[in-house]
Amino acid sequence: MTSTPDLDRAGRPPTRPRGGGAARAIAALGVTAVAAAPAQAHVKWFAPYFVEAPPQQIGRTLENPWFWTGIALVLVFFLATRSIERTGAGQAILRGIDKLTHPLWVRLDDFMRFVIAAFFVAIFAVGGVYLTPDLETPHEWVSWMQLLIAALVFSRRTRPLAALGIVLLWVLALSDYEFFHLLDYLSLGLAVAAYLVLESSDREEWRRYRFEVLRWGVAIALMWSSLEKFAYPDWFYPLVEEKPFLTFGMPRDVFIPMAGVAEFTMGFGLLWTALVRRLSAVALFVIFNAAVYPFGRIDLVGHALIMAVIVAIAADPTPQVRFALRRSMWSIPPTLVAALLFFSGSYWGLHRLFYGTDGGVVQARQAGSAGTHHATHAVLPAQRERAQAVDPSTWRSAYDASMDRMHQDMAAGLSHGDPDVAFVQGMIAHHEGAIEMARIQLQSGRDPENRALAEHIIEQQEREVAQMKRWLQQQRP
Image (cartoon, rainbow, N blue to C red; front, side):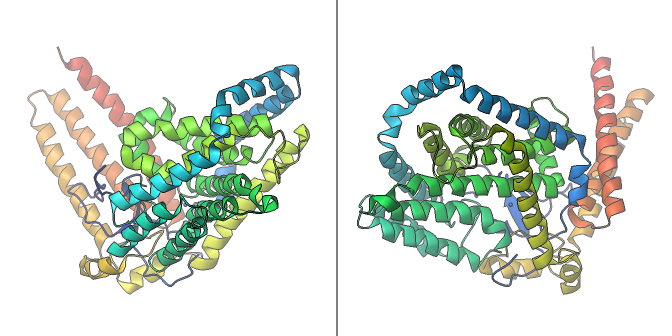
């Protein structure tokens, strides 16, 4: 979803309401074919993120010990799973999964058609979006086209038309949104369209590949979108602070790189042998389902197709699927490294190719566009007038609003009758103001030294705020 939001009194762009016709974002779990206006906001996970700005250098990820910890843990999982798969115990596990999923496997095409149709009915009900609740459109007729696609799914003769409609929706989305960050949507959308064409074919030599295109489409989408956690880790700070249970008690800067590793490697696991890919699919299904409750039904709508394909992969009893990666256990590490190099090289390389080394920041400021909301997607035509009316110094307004709030909260805290309590309450407000300023810098600034300083301020002062709040709790009778 694209918007140019106003700022609240704390200098934070407002989150979009959860539920109703609101657009949802996660994942995603991230190059333009059509020229787009610079400096707009992209909304995912119910919050705006600025993505034309240069991504964090890949070297920062490679220097992060938690990234390598995640890689090591996943390699242990893959190697152990592949080793067990060759034993009688591994085959017993696979037979157990087969027995559990067999009723679904024999009706898997019915299941996929139902989910695809239900998905398009759901986004028709959401209204005003393209292929996902992330991507808004001002065109009412697009919603009715989605309802038509849902109806066309149920007949073998009309399923190719439904596939054509899906491709057309993606092409239409390019008229409003930039190509680079539609790539994860592209791989999944084209995979679903290809599935509908192949499933409706009378030629078995074509039809047998219908689940393969789904598997590769989801795997590519997951591996691509996971790179956002390495390229823009600050995008995720508000999310984990608002919903700290998502980190399972891990510090933020430990959880985010390891979550990126998990998403990438589980997507990679979908391309491996039977037990590896099926356990990877089960893990992904649990992860996606865990997001439904905290983020609401709109999250279920946005992830419905991915979740359905993951279920299909888990149910597939084929010992060695077509186009899978090599079966050798010791080929796992070099193949994983090659996949990481290919996807990360593509992500950073294409971003630089289309946005330049400055990520369009300088051009956006010179253009005097709406603030420094550097967008994944271009602003919608219906929103351009509003974008032009917004104060071009949005970052300055954010700083001013943050300071106003800090001064008000400090004055309130210092009014306490106990000098110790007054000091702590005033310092909490002071630190929270500094944290807000640092977040604004991360969203709007581009100097590497200042960004590193802002990250340090957030980490250090959040720790001190927590310490002072604990002290206040201890003073209460």
